[in-house]
Image: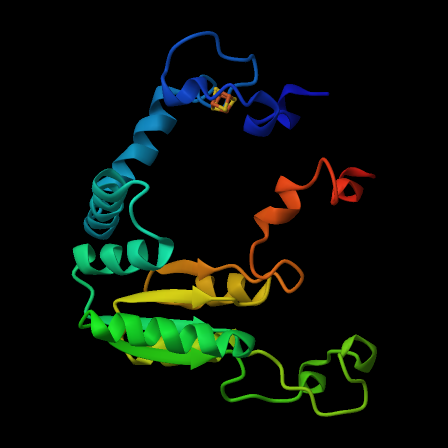
Length: 212
Ligand code: SF4
């Protein structure tokens, strides 16, 4: 295997987190040249990135292991100075989005929540074949992550929170949202939105995942 095919997952030593000890030959830290390292580091000096890094560090440093993700998200928003929070939610997680909206409002945030089926149209209009519809032959609303981003961009939200967007639709939403996006819930239709459970059980119930 070429050294370029090996990466952090093949190392696992995490020497980079202490900058001590022996690094593997393919290490992605030691293989960086100084110019590359400082060019990337300089990017943290941009105003927005700097502010976000400060807020993220504050949430981590002050509340490590003390706050849930819901609380961390709102704490992050508050340290960032966000006033208006956008929620891009899956229609299947509307209850969770409604509860999160109530919690955010109770903490003084203005909230705009946009469901994935907003401005919907039939999947067929996008050339999606009938056989990959859940109910072939029937109207089936496509998720509309571009419209979710469009509305939240129009609303000039300060920070967007993704709740259970489908794999792929989340990628589009993240790409086209003008504001930064943080994910509150990663959808997993099988594992009650806990995708890591498949990894935790990959030596037992989900060992099939490791088969070629
Ligand atoms: S950066 Fe280097 S030391 Fe850190 S996990 Fe990756 S390969 Fe290992």
